[in-house]
Image (cartoon, rainbow, N blue to C red; front, side, top):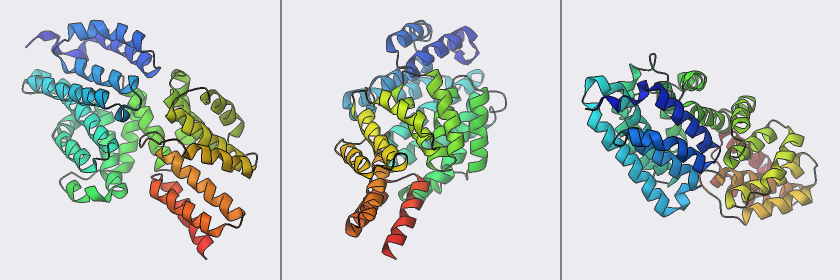
Length: 359
């Protein structure tokens, strides 16, 4: 077993990878590859090489689920990461390191299945990771990187079956989680981890916005990510959303205009949805809001990045239809909103307004 397998103890290589990850998250792909190249050469058969390959594919081909060839390559790299990790897993001195990469690879595989709509496959991938999650528990106080996986597990073990009832029977095989503890672990990971910090911040932003309806905390994490990676339009989209939900309309409007110039379906759908939200809630120009919302609906959504903005758009159209006295139109829009929505607060708002409309 080569001594250089201990990547997590190689401070120089970790520093190089972090420099590369900063470029990658900022969508500077050539600079990222230039940083990663030396580490990939040094650790040619190590799981870190395959995990980096997967992350590069993920950010280079946004959204990766709409690029079939890249998605297949992404899944292949993650499976190579799993295979390479197993080479080291049986050696006691490499147990912690290989456990980390097995957790990461199976976690990304589960997410890929989730966004493909394969919820049962996602649960099965998560079940494969359970062994390594249990193994990793013993390391979380000595290595902050394990806090991220522990936090994700504890939170989503309880939350995922609530939002995807189809997986509830499978989840019976999983140890119970703890959402409060999961958030604490993710926040500690964000403060103290190196390799997992940005991923932890991304999940915390989304959890506080999507499930906890704590828009102030969501904006804290979103603001950090956007300031650090201003070229990343995915982080910019999330920042506009957080600003809107915190009623910081002038800032949101200014940033949304920048988003207008990004020519791809994710950015364009987001731009029009946010334009409609600003017109509806800030300037109270309901005609302009309706026009912008309808433009957003003409663009094919992406389940991971823009499906929720479709729900937000239908909610706005329902309110406008109700104001115009079009009760049947409003009812239809509320149904479409609920069909697309996953944000718990948005579902609650739509149901409450729908109930008032039917009263």
